[in-house]
Amino acid sequence: MPNTINLTAAQATIMYLQKQFSVLDGERERLIGGIFGIFGHGNVASISQAIDEYGGDLPYYQPKNEQAMVHAAMGYAKMKNRRATLACTASIGPGSTNMITGAATATVNRIPVLLFASDTFAHRRSGNVLQQLEHPIDGDLTVNDCFRPVSRFFDRISRPEQILTALPEAMRVLTDPADTGAVTISFPQDVEGEAYDYPEEFFRERNWVIRRREPSRDDLDEAIGALLKARAPLIIAGGGVRYSAAEVALRDFANEFGIPVAETHAGKGVSLDTSYCLGGMGVTGTGAAGRIAEGADVVVAIGTRLQDFQTGSRSAFHDPNITFISINTNSYDAHKLRGVPVVGDARLSIERIAIGLREAGYATARTYRDDIKARQAEWRETYRKDIAVAPGGELNQGTIVRIVNEATEAGDVVIAAAGTPPGEIHKAWDNSNGSKSFLEFGFSTMGHEIPAAIGARLASQNDEEVFVIIGDGTYLMGPTEIVTAVQENAKITVVVIENYGYQCIRDLQENSSGIDNLGNEFRARDNDVLRPNGSYLEIDYAANARSMGATVFSAADEEQLKDALAKARGVRGPAVIVVKAETRGRSVGSGVWWDVGASQVTNTKSVEDAASKFRAGGRNQRYLS
Picture 1 (cartoon, one colour):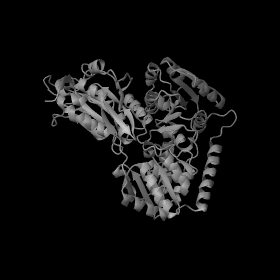
Picture 2 (cartoon, helix red, strand yellow; picture 1 turned 60 degrees about the vertical axis):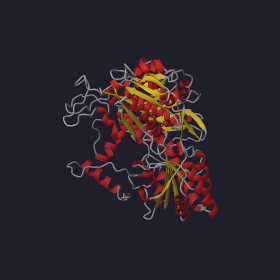
Picture 3 (cartoon, rainbow, N blue to C red; picture 1 turned 120 degrees about the vertical axis):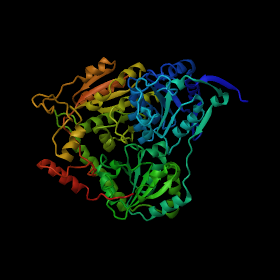
Picture 4 (spheres, rainbow, N blue to C red; picture 1 turned 120 degrees about the horizontal axis):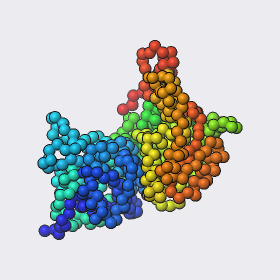
């Protein structure tokens, strides 16, 4: 009989987490770097006790919102290049369901997070209990079942011995490059505290190898054959390039064969100093990438899900005979757009395809390379002029992003997720100085940014700066994690752009529906009893951030912002810079269409004009399974 140790399910779980390691290319990393938790009934009696008694090697972090702690785990995982993450525990009912948006964000973006969602009694002796969902025809349904569609793995633990199979499966999914995301363990409050004789071998250290999947020879040959026929190829580089550590391989591939690279939001910055980098691809990308995409005859998609913002809702590519080559560890993604699938690791696939092209003597024509260079130069000059601020004029968001970019150094990180900032960063941020961009735009979650920055800081105690760029609308969604940053002395710099509301969506509303503003600007209800469309609200964001313990700076022009950024670099703990911006400013777009829908019937001329313009923009949209 194996030796056993008598523990509660919660105690065994905490012991187990501390013995799990990931291994990539021989580099070993603790898989679960710590645990965030907000305690209430369902986890305070057992999980908190287990952390206190058995969590000697498991740091505990105290968030201020359950959703935020999942975003923090994402920031941690990104900083660790998906080789490690954090666990999160929440109480029964609203505590746990508050994590659902975070779970969806992680799963959509393929970022590993581990969630312990407390659940109601498995034994049911207490009868109907506080925060229990009583379903008339589904007796075992609880609110935690909402996690199922937004989790890559879900399990409900109804007996303490079930963690013997559930936890290893959770670790497998967390370290699977193709299928990682949110892992949710639904833990009834009675089962957490129930004891079992667990085998001692369960608590031995275990390595979870993150394997580089070798692409098949058949896939490679088909991809090489398609590229050899390409006159105007284009690479779309996604987050999979970063997670495969394939940046150098991509740069060398693009430079050797003269193939331009456009980046997705998740892939922003992965092409390093590639000579043929076009910047962001798609709706929020550059005009250079948009024009090259229109004429591309072969598109090599590397580590990307090819979502609508990148493909212009499948309208960005005009060549009727275009061929897509999709390199992805996930077979589902690799088979999108009727493409040539290359199911395998990004770095290995790039290196293998390069061998085949080199042996065949492939390279793009000089005229194509010259066209790429011309498009790059044209776009840079167009954008530079567009975001220029007249003397005494208000800063626009493009200029603010440029100023922050110029203040960064090698290794610094910028984080953005929703609104205008991720679009400006996507189209214009220059990563050639070695800075990194973490753009969460697969789920474009407002409120992701500050906690993600905290997670990134917890993952690295080096000298790099972690910048957050957000609008005032996003700031109001969840500023309280500034308190967590103060608590952890987390060195982050939050740039809050004040422009009186959700101006990104107001602009979309105007252009897609023909409405000037409805519910997107922060206005008082002065005279209109139906809609708040009066004067702009004056909110003291600086005072708010200062009240939570941050060091605060304010800026209204370029010199003040530069000065604030320089001073913020020397601050210990979180710094917040509030910068006034042009209220309804927007920078030149990529010209790539986006399918956002429009009213088909209206009696309003502006709405009719917007709908007509919308329909015209979608003329190149086509169905590609």
